[in-house]
Amino acid sequence: MIKKLSASVREYKAASLLTLIFIVGEVIIECFIPFITAQLVNNIKSGVAISELMKTGLILFVLAVLSLTCGGVAGYTCAKASSGFAKNLRHDVFSRIQTYTFSNIDKFSSSSLVTRLTTDITNIQMSYMMLIRIAIRSPLMFVFAIVMAYRMGGSLAFTFVIVVPVLIFGLLLIAKFAMPAFRSVFRKYDKLNESIEENVRGMRVVKGFSREEYEKKKFYDAAENIRKDFVKAERIVALNNPLMQICLYFNMVFILIVGAKLTITGKGTIIDIGQISAMLTYGMQILMSLMMLSMIYVMLTMSAESAKRVCEVLSTLPEITNPENPVMSVENGDVDFNNVSFKYFKEAKRFAVKNIDVHIKSGQTVGIIGGTGTGKSSLVQLIPRLYDVTEGEVLVGGVNVKDYDIKTLRDSVAMVLQKNQLFSGTIKENIRWGDEKATDDEVIAACKLAQADEFVNSFPDGYDTYIEQGGTNVSGGQKQRLCIARALIKKPKILILDDSTSAVDTKTDAKIREGFKNYIPETTKIIIAQRVSSVKDADMIIVLDGGEIADIGSHEELISRCDIYREVYEQQISGGDENGKQ
Image (cartoon, rainbow, N blue to C red; front, side, top):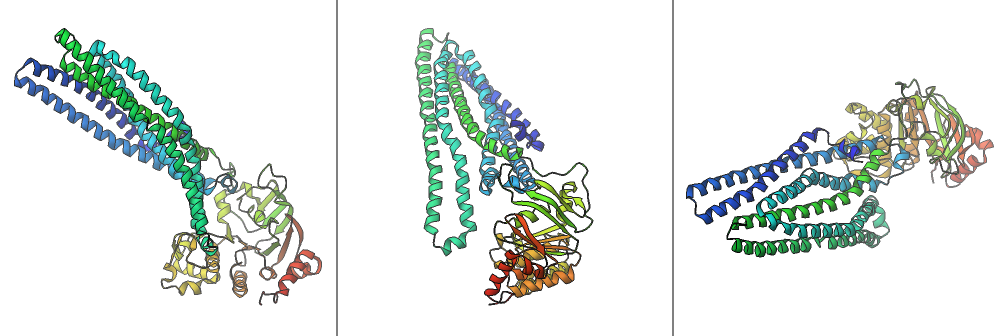
């Protein structure tokens, strides 16, 4: 886990190392200041010349400036290193997520991934900052202060034999009881983010069903669970302060009483006032070092859970990878399913699609019809290797899809889903997701082909109209047509429409299909649809039932021999004519 995380330090190793160097310098200087101060106090008591006092004072001033400089530089380099480390770690996690296949993503919820990229990495950043600064400073300060205290105070330093073990035991006990509460918090953050994500995405549904109060209660419950865990943990951690105060004041009282007695009885020969003042300072440094170490222990234990969650993402390798010598070009849009079967999980008892044997020639239009859950979407997702087949093989352009370079294959296939996604940005920027180098004329041509140009020009800003996150400021039909235009500008060899005209009226749907026929005749077009009118003119119609092929043929052939197809067609006809008009 440490090895995986440390790989994200990269260019910030120098800043991390400089932090350690300046921290060591700061600690050494701070431990010498009480020693010089003790000499100054003793010199004042013995009545030395003012010039000697000025000399000692100047040394103290220089040491203070050096300590401040070391601390300031260490603070800067530490902030630079920790924030840079967090930036790299977020980039690495996000980059790893981009390599995931659908099966990888199925293992993580989107809210959990958001928590790992934000809250968890912030905790790791805080821990790294403490490790390279406080975790070095505190042990060094503890060791140097103990050494200097024994050198200055002699037998008086035995007070630390009592105080230090008590404080260490108390801090470890506090941390032990606080940790379980801290660990449980991060798992509950996923629930909180999930509530927020669902509510924001489904705002229209929430308002449509007047479920605002229910959603507020759900969010309150998730936030309240986190609050309870934090309160429980913080109550325990809050005991650090009184424990620290008890040890600190015991140390002060012991040093003052015993030190004063030794000073009086020994007449300054055993210990003097300067040594007593130094012992008080060293005592404060020792106890504060232990206090800082306990805070580090708490923070590291908290972030250990975050580190495990982040490393889980980094350790999850994509299940679909490039072959050793990938094919770098797709010859044509031929698609062959050779006895293909597929299930989403190895442990699954049934296949999503089974025994599929279909051969599609480049430029053909193929319709796929079937009820909900019959495997229509599962089947077409095998073409661009969003999933890999469980049995059999899928060929594109006569080559097994597993032999292609993944980017090359997916650049040749464009998919338009029923619930496709638009991103924040202008309409023009969204269309250019298909081809970032596309000219304005090409963008307009794609929109005309997708029957989107007319409504785009009706907006005041036309193609520069800003699309809100998720495309919330356009209708469902408009969103689908923009997504079709985005796919078309990609100039794919295979175009897959997965029920992507469901929100479009039948007249517009017919115009889109007519445009495909005239303007992209060489592109293989696979259309998944619920409406028979969307696929009746296809060269081939595949009827799926229970994940298997029930029949394949033209519209006329299926009407005459396929009961499933004929039943769907007649049900739709009974509600209007075959074009779906009422």
